[in-house]
Image (tube, rainbow, N blue to C red; front, side, top):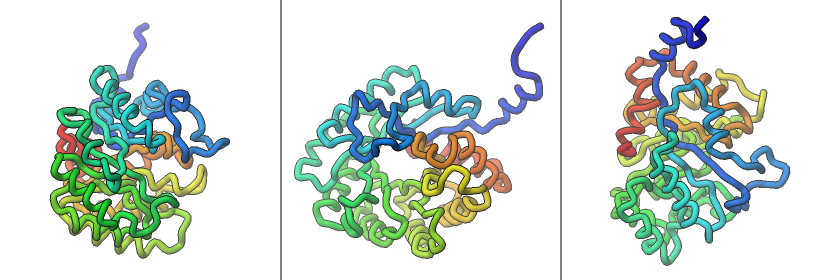
Length: 297
């Protein structure tokens, strides 16, 4: 007797939309220090490529883009080299990376010059929803200067901000018209909050700016395991997608951070349920085509 996919399962796999995951984390705590990971947290362990492969099994994830994990600043170049080596190997789904950086630093230009000619490094991120970066931090002249430099170097900037800070974010975008931006996690609405009106207004405002795309990703982590249902996610996903339109949205897994509230599979299947009434062409753009075009992968 031959074992394998039934004809029905094989047909289902063939019809499954291929996924490009634009927001994949990895970390080995023996190799890198992550000051933000608290002892005792479910995230306070290693999450390596084998774990990612297991988490995404059967979901048709064909490519992934690594997202920096806020390592200690002295390890930023080492992290960039680590992920470049993985991309170069061609042995995994990872084909590109967004690495850590501090745009306001005096030597930021020199720092990003390290990536000149590196076809795998697509952009820079500094997480801005932490105590060290209060509201308005991104509008400081030094920060704006650094983000403008990214546009000159053809590197993008990922915006990972508080859902209540999107007004400040909009000002930064206006100050850097030649830089490409990605708004992470739908702009970080809070599933536990009863009032996301500032987020809703902010997303609509940012979506008017043509040098910005958005990742449908990550905000599920603001809930808890068993603390959400698909109907809770739908208003945030639909508002973001309707604001940005079908050509400026990209899927992101945000693994393993998403596992604070959902497995990777639960997140993918919930998102698919929310968008199932949209045309198949738009679903393909969300899960695959837009990411391939935006990152050149």
